[in-house]
Length: 234
Image 1 (cartoon, one colour):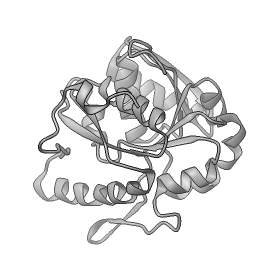
Image 2 (cartoon, rainbow, N blue to C red):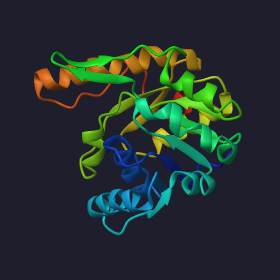
Image 3 (cartoon, rainbow, N blue to C red):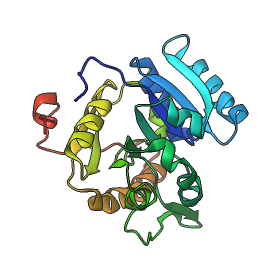
Image 4 (cartoon, rainbow, N blue to C red):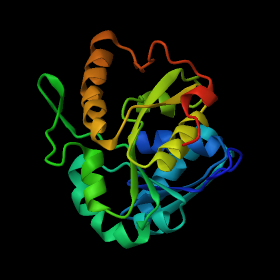
């Protein structure tokens, strides 16, 4: 078990998109060493430069290939587009090993009516991730968090993060990882199979955002923000 005071190094697989950059910015500000990965170091460096413009000199940020980001990390964050997941992860299987993997992938597309969830044969993107990385401890989280709000680093967040996973210790650590961002609190939502319901919420939230011109988050009525109540040790 990692101490609550420790800031584990984080490695992003495909961290150049808005959700990856947003999470990287917030966690770097919170003191985590962040290794932002991509298929090319050049593209990763562009993402690091963007994050650095937002957070200034705060935090430790490194551009890397996906494999180097994974190797340098204690916790891996998979933030590739869903259509890239099946190809991106198998080459990293040995490098990832039995690390905790936070899957933030949302399987969806946009059509004339807006965002739409895609069916996933494995049940969810997170379950597919677990199949592709059988030795890893996959946890599903941050699907319901607005990337635009994350990227506006000086604006406060007030949101719950819905977290699903089968490994109690891995879930516990991801709940703490969520709580290291001010105004963000993780909520246990059962086993990894429940990720399908959370992932399918994302197109709904995006549709609400488009209709009302907002960046909605989720707050679970009846669940407070006391960390000892939200994520007791397994």
